[in-house]
Image 1 (cartoon, one colour):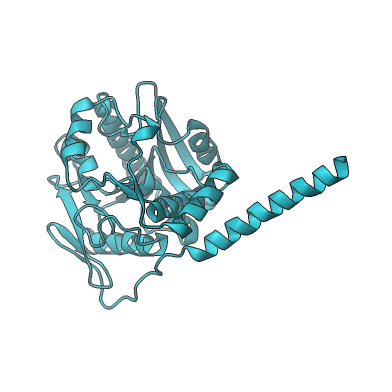
Image 2 (cartoon, rainbow, N blue to C red; image 1 turned 90 degrees about the horizontal axis):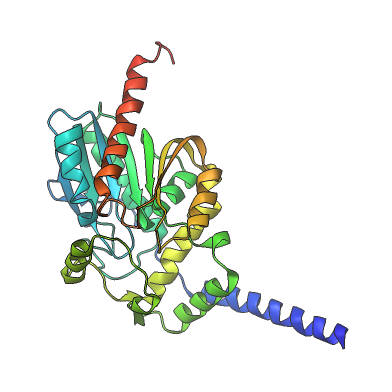
Length: 323
């Protein structure tokens, strides 16, 4: 009897694996588009290499010490930095460019998941365009939640041309960090009903303690309220790529996490932070939630980002020649 039960158990395991592989093969996303021209940085847009116009917001500092390129999280857009970026410009002489990733905000394919390859190509285009406009100014890459996952996945593939990374509440709940049954069920659901949507209200999770901001986001038509199942699968895949390849990222890194984060598991973020290479500065916020830059204690985070960049720039200027 024990032998039959073992055989039955193994059969169920292999059947689950086969179903997962089948579902994974059935759900695919676009490859990066062919470039037709160099990227262009406009006043309120980025023209990507395939000619697509992506939404962009910028907050310019006078005589900036450094530039921040910021990527938002899932279902959000560049407005997530609308509190922090003006403070950085006025108080810390940091210019911020915040991109609406493709599929979000004012960029094309709103509500659709365009695929990690496309998002990474757009990120590289944004870096190249900013470097063209600010060739002598240090550039720091900031990613929040899903945006941080895109940054990690991109740099793990081929190092990004930036001077450091700021990873805020990084979206790393995928791959080895997510239980196999979750990934299996999501792959199956996305293969059977990719266009079906869900709001996530049943989860009962809170993103920030700043209630006015939550109300503002609920009323904002550029914040996605209903997520397609295939988009949920897409973000889990890019989060998995980030988690599984974090050890390939090397550089100066500021890692921010909130102790009250109800969106990304704390343990997954902690494991990711330990696997990153280079100089990793981890900041934990006892009263921090997932939307670290929009929490009630957000100014503490803004100040930490500015001081970390200033410290790095001061060390770079004072380094002996040849180092």
